[in-house]
View 1 (cartoon, rainbow, N blue to C red):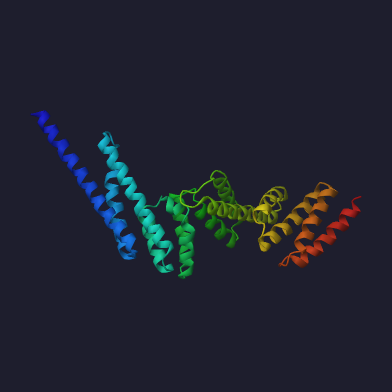
View 2 (spheres, rainbow, N blue to C red):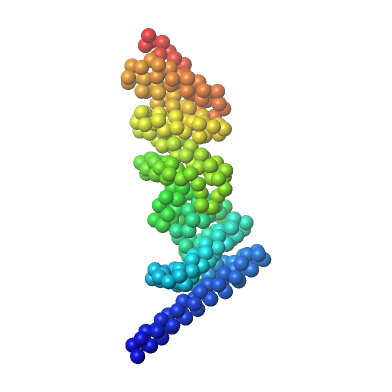
Length: 300
């Protein structure tokens, strides 16, 4: 009798799992149809339904039998497609709809790979819709779910720099540099696009850190950060001028303290290169170069 009872319980349990998988399969098929029709409203609704149905399977106990493992694998596939459907549809949508779809993805799957390298689109859409004030809170919350998201760290870095929260900005810059140093590929972007994005983010992080470190008179570290930034920001005159101006200041100060005429001359060279670029630093950089060369001559 006990064996019969246990068999009956197992049958009920299997039936519930199969029923759950049927629900996932049905939702997934309907979602695929909606995606093919580009029906945004249905995509949102069905993606949520699919994700919730899949969670009932993936959040259960670890699969033991091959049947269980297959069911869980299929649920994970459904989850990935549902997340992708929200992400890809958002990219093609108007800003207000994009915000709604990304908010839905964030609510249902806060650790999704489509958010990890996709938050920049969400932040951009918020700004476009006049909701820029919401970005800081969303970014702070996102960092708890995705502490290594380049997009989130880059946004928090820029926000801290804009508010002149220098210590916080340097920390975010260092975290971003470390994260990007460990990542050669994106889970969702083509390699060429990821390389371009990674280069831009690294350049920006090194530059912001370097400028702040100059302001803090930490000239040695500033020199390291700014030299690392230069090849990464090549082609961007504004960023290049900023790096060169601050490199001029850092090397001049280091040369003065160390009585190193060669380093003072490096400061002058960086300043001259900055003066050759049309920017807000141009006149001051030209003046700095003259002063630095004069002081270097006196150090003979």
